[in-house]
Image 1 (cartoon, helix red, strand yellow):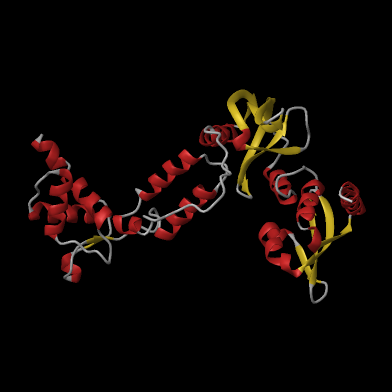
Image 2 (image 1 turned 60 degrees about the horizontal axis):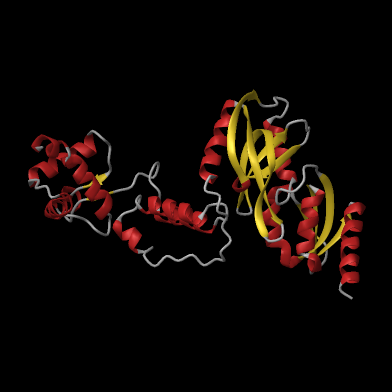
Length: 328
């Protein structure tokens, strides 16, 4: 037991430096000794602590500032190549907290793991952390396994089989299994707080997407994926879709209110051609899927005028007219 504890000395010291030291909270040798005694119930003499700190610096390349360097104390400097900064940890926590595709319990587990990568002082800033959102998370607990299985299938160029679920009213709102799908998966993408797999359905020639949180019972098959689809095909498909609807691209021209400019740039980025139209509006020219863009127009109807294609303009006008007839 004594030999076991001696071998663990260097880990005790490293853990204390990780957990309780930074530039604003330097530790003396006595501080380190006391922490180890309180937490691990092990007594280490000061010479052993100094010797192991030197070993961590010289043999394991830990960036530890020593008392000899600053005459104040010891602290561990994070490695920017492998250690997350506090702002990066907060961004990860926020992403999983507000992402609808991650179930609540899984979000809590991921957040707990993220906090374990920080020292006590950084976590103190998160003690009152709250999630301000509506209760809109999906409850598919297979989501992380889905990511792992699909990633493995993509890497090994294998098809997958799964059950796909959608909401139906029969007569109450329920998540219903709509049947078995067999697809060739090519990429996992994240858009508008949802994760999708870009894929080719068996017997089809156009790419399609499925939401990962609606996929269950994924099975990786021995059959190889369709080799005719290239990375360029996938990239072009992703650029042409809006909110993951549809699978064909058309040139679209619209006039938008200036209030939409930030949203347009965020959503479409460099794929959009944006020109000033007048003092209050701009022209947007973009290649996108008509079904997806139609839904975008309908959610911003008072701020978008469709110029072309004419079939999109006519379809939106028909939707408006039907709505007006029903609500007169």
